[in-house]
Image (cartoon, rainbow, N blue to C red; front, side, top):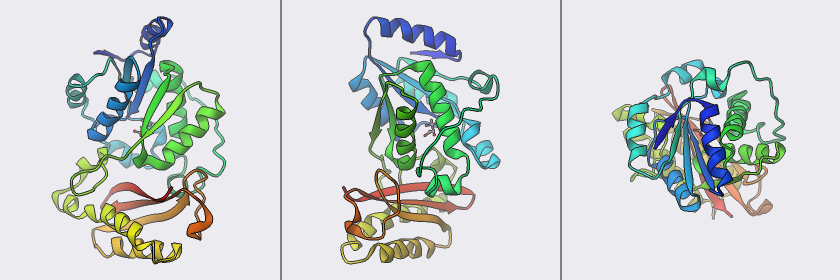
Length: 281
Ligand code: PAF
């Protein structure tokens, strides 16, 4: 496994491998790797010859400076984990390498950044689109892997991949959960023991909502989820939306669309967690 900080070095190595017909799979991350990330690597290693992981805490996607500052950075531990799985290259650029100068590229997301994360985290998806397109330009993968916990992010990345005519297949991979149902996230390691003991209510409520939805309207289901999570004094729902799984438009009737996803963001102290569940697809 090679660890490289330089885009030009990585680009050169990968172009050489590509010219020999090797298929490149890419897993972009912000580090603090957990089993969810490792599952993406597992998909990438089964479907490609060369696996590349990037670790870069991208400042442009944080609308909240304190969230950026406290984001976990544990590179040595990440490298230890990557050494135990199939990973050929780890790209660990610094800020200067990714943003040598201001990049004013603009993207159009249609409706995709007007709802949920886009609405509550202004500028977040522009930052994600910016860094992902820069990474794609360096790695030029055949396939890139993203976790479905960030459901809206996957939709945005598919959209900009098409818009920018990147010849890359975006593969979205299932959410990996802890035993009690909590969706794996790098931010989970910031939770206190007390918070950790309470946050499984989020996924439990989503799973129950799926059951209850058979006898409730969309609005009743939404109200029930928000009320149930908010009943816990440690948790504070920022939004819960039930949306069409491709347009991300909120729905008002179950029969309105074939693929339906319920997406939630919850504040736990100063930590913000997201999760989602499919209702119908
Ligand atoms: O999902 C993440 O970890 C980040 O948003 C990504 C895709 C690596 C871009 O910084």
